[in-house]
Length: 254
Length: 306
View 1 (cartoon, rainbow over the protein chains, first blue to last red):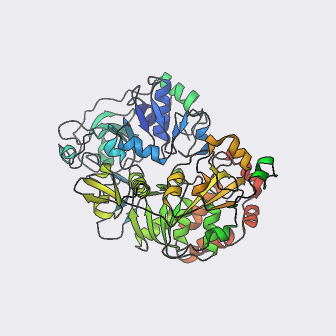
View 2 (cartoon, rainbow over the protein chains, first blue to last red):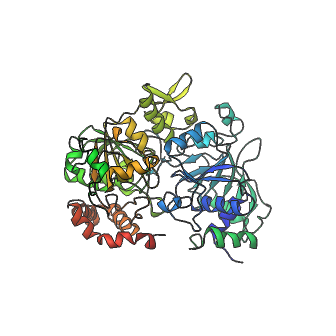
View 3 (tube, rainbow over the protein chains, first blue to last red):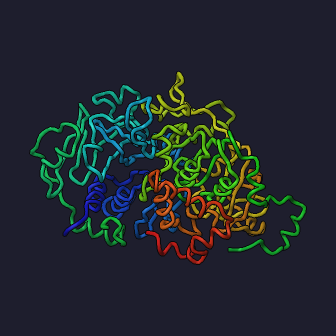
């Protein structure tokens, strides 16, 4: 069965989510939202999904492109405010948070703010991030990027909007952060991990149909060389549920 | 859209009370240079867009703008029109429609003072005001470069803290209110209730007025009580081109038109933004609604928008 890059990423991210967890979604989050709703109908019925607008456990039967679209509220279980999101974060209630980035680096640090040197006007001004705190308070973070290029995957971010493993090793813990930080990064090309003790990005598995050289060329830092294990392709059950229950209008296919 | 409601028995019984309904211009009077203005909603949803256009028609400049943690259209419009001196924001984008062109340009040309925020430092700053404290702890802001570049987070001996934020005025948009300022959101109230509590003055535009008896019939639906509100301005479709949760969707076609105009390069295409301001800002609300295709089109947006 053929599938789009974004369908693949939603399926791979869904596999990372566990039953009973609480997860918060961000902006431009069609892939994480689809992944969470898919996980709910496959292996994680007790996963709690919280939209950035405060909608809890929406069940719209389709993917609305804006994560704060008013139509996500129809049939959801509760509506929180910004204060509830503050509470969720500061009280350490979140199990996971998903992030993309203008830049993501080897150690999973996230830049959504600016590129270029400090003290100068930004070379590129990014949108900023409203959920910075959750990179510290959520028990683990999951990274994703539909753009896998050396411009996005850099050796070191120009600005740490939200901390990953900082400069690797024990640096995150030494900064006073007790949560696990980035555990996985999913792109159209591969699934990456951040193994102990260095917490630097390595290829966990290579996505179907991708040549290893493409991953090496698209990544702006050194990776442990292939051979790498193969990503298990989406199953018929995964794609079937994704298309029949979560994304009936095919937003991820277009 | 309901107009001003018929007088019911309960309405008659409350006839001695002061109505907070006023025109947009009176509600916004006094907002100008150095005003710290908080704008409610989130991204391009529940935004007081018509109120922002009215401020621009009045020639506002030099604002200190505090956006809801994630913001969008009206932030970009105010910056593009040169009305903002200092911006307190966590996020400005049009989500899947693209980046905010005028925000980006002003930042890259260093034409704007930007105070980097996060949801936690905005909420923490507002909560400090609610608590009567100089600041509020936000330990979760550890290890971010905001600590190096932002004045909205300070490092204390016990970790990062957000200084108190007390807006001079909050300008919000909700779906309904009665004339005494009891406000009802039919979707996300998001930051609006906290903005209302922390701000010295509170202006709410609403798509429709409802009777006080309607509010009393379901008091658990009131999201901001009247005692926090100074002005209610009935303004049907007052959030357009943003959505008003439960009533109409955001207008993607218009937002894309705005993005093209705001993102046009200087020079020949540089008039595109000025033309946008002429065509869609410098006109009264009724003419605006005709120009964007009429209210029948707005009621059908949820069939048009993916």
